[in-house]
Length: 302
Image (cartoon, rainbow, N blue to C red; front, side, top):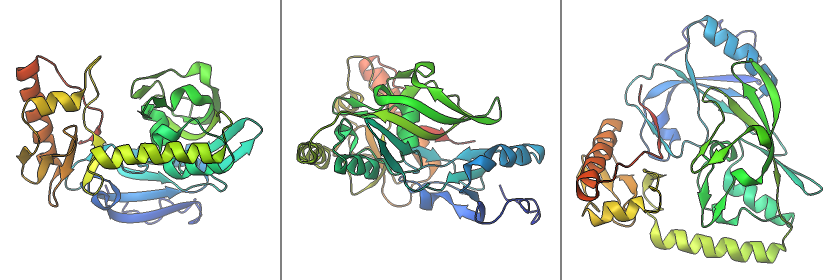
C-alpha cells in the first residue's frame, strides 16, 4: 500500500516517524521473499496512539515488521503499510537483578550485552534470529531455554485501549511458541529476571549452542527458521525427513537437505512457491504418519 497524500504525516516530525515509500520486503526478510509497500519507521513510541488513529481514519491497514525472521510475506503490492520500531538507546539496561530490554533490539546482541554484565539464562537462544519483541511474542525457545518464563513485566501498546501500558507477567501467558499478547498489540519493552553467572561460563555455553546450530541448520541459506511446530512428543523435522522430503522442491523453494524443518529460498522463490511447498509437505506427512503439522512461521499473505 502506498501513502499517496504527502501531507498525511505532516503532523509527525520526520525524525519521529520516517516515511520510506515503496520498500521491497524481500530485502527485509530472512526468507528474501515479500512484495512492496510503504514503511514507517517509528522513533518516538509515545506517538503510536496518534499514528494508529491517523491510519485508521484514512483506512490504512498496518503490520509491525521486526527483524523479518520467522515470517513469510505475500508477493506483489501489499494491501497494508509496514511499521518498524527504531531502537531506543540504551537497548539493554541493568537495574540490580532486573534487566530491561528494548524490543527492537536484536536478540543475539541483547544476550551478549547481558552476558557482559554477568547475567545469563538466555544462552540457548543465542542463534535465534530476529528481535527481542519477536522472541517474546512467539515465546522463542531452543536447547532447553524459553524466554517467556524470564519475563517479569512488559511495556505494551494496547490496541483495544489505544494506549501504552505496563503489564505484569502474571497477566501474560507463555506457551510453546505462543504468547497471549493480542495480535494488534505491540511490545515496546520487557523487564526480565536473569540469573547472575560469570561471563566466561555464559560465553562457553553460547559457543556450545552456536556449534550445535552450525552443525545442523542451513545458516548460509535464506530461510525463516523452523516452518512447523513440533507436535507433542514428536519432531516435525524428523517426520518430514522420514517422509523422504529432504531436497523436495517447488520452484526455487526447497526443503533443506541439512534440516528438514527448514525450507530455503534457492534464490528466486516466491511466496506462492513457498506456500505450495508448505501444503505439499503437510499433506505428505499427514499421509505417511497421520500427523497434521501446524505452522510456526507467521504468514502475511493477504
